[in-house]
Image 1: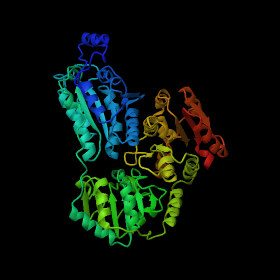
Image 2: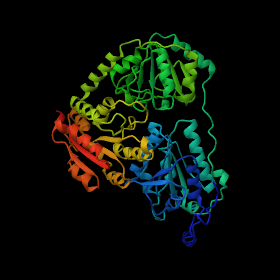
Image 3: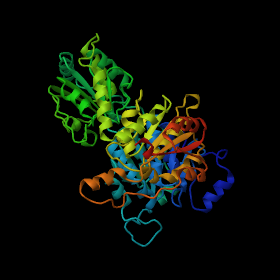
Image 4: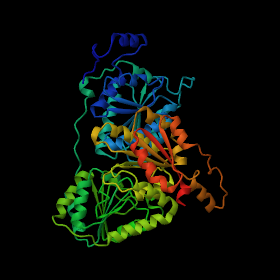
Length: 558
């Protein structure tokens, strides 16, 4: 990469216009985006605004595809879906003030779910901080506001600092717990000349994977190998260690239970896998009944336990990139600090060769899980299993914080690879599913012949949080199926009100004509009026191409 843009790339008309506006063509916007492009990111999400155009100027010449969301929150969730399907950090470009603040719900999600995200925003010019003079989009302290949400937020003073912040972000994504960052570039710095040599904009070498202490690995391996009832719990921090975790489970005969962020780390078709069912007593009983438990990249938080407790009878071995996670939520006997994709192979070597059969009847455990999931809400469970049965086996499924997802699809959909079930189990935000599916569909469209179909299944209340993003999906010419499971509003909150003796307040929602709404956005709407029509309509909608929304009333499954 070079630090200047040559005349054959930038036309004279553009250079003249930039000069007239007092803008350098090789500015901080270019330097930052060249750096990001060097790390393999070829897609960004956001909305162009008055103050961020010196980011957008450079996207075409750098070969970066810009996806314009209809709300910055949607841009953030779409970037999350794209990141999960590509393995590269999501990047969001906002404008100053409201644009940035609109994206902070997505930033909070990425922080809570440990996902890599870079938010780039302009800010007030150097020297104008806290001026309170009524400038456009003036915000008291955008960096501090963002810093309260993300891993770190920096207001830089030079293009070189901005480039260094990008390098620091990618280093953190590779060596630590991946979480969102925010870089605020003052408007005069963004538009001014970038005194950053080309070599400084190039990606830096991968620092390498961190292995665990050998003595601790030997101790952990002895506990696992000597156990008669071992079990493994995998979370979002294990997604790059799937092959090694699978091999270790087979050697130990260890059942595997995953968090929802770890769903598919070990293929859910594997005979040792219980599933992403920590909220169910039958799955927790497997873990708690073990005499040695290996927890890989999982915080095992209360949001996934639904009031249950993980308290194994025997030893607990933890694998995590952060030492501070070792005793969090579950007390551990051995903490192995390092990258899961380095540490689990260490354990595999130390445990030795051979295979064992499972120490309990996992078919019976999985059957118990099915019954317990059904008991939460029989109607939603029935709907989810009928819907899941009609989805392609390879489908990437995005869900929202709606009952059809956490009471239904989380159990009904079985995935054989990680990051194929897009959800936010801890942050549990509404409005995530549709834009995340859009980001995933953008990623899949870039795969060519190897792309997988993408389906979003969301409740009506959740879907309305982001319905404007249907326009984004149509504009991007995506193949995307959206299934709206309509139960009349916020059904869980209505039940919460009833449990407290409160009559329904603000939870029974007016419904649009969902199919007509999809048509109005330029997609195609479908109505399921009889349960017997579900399979045929879903098949036709998924085969039609383009953006298709299928309205499925919950009352059909009562």
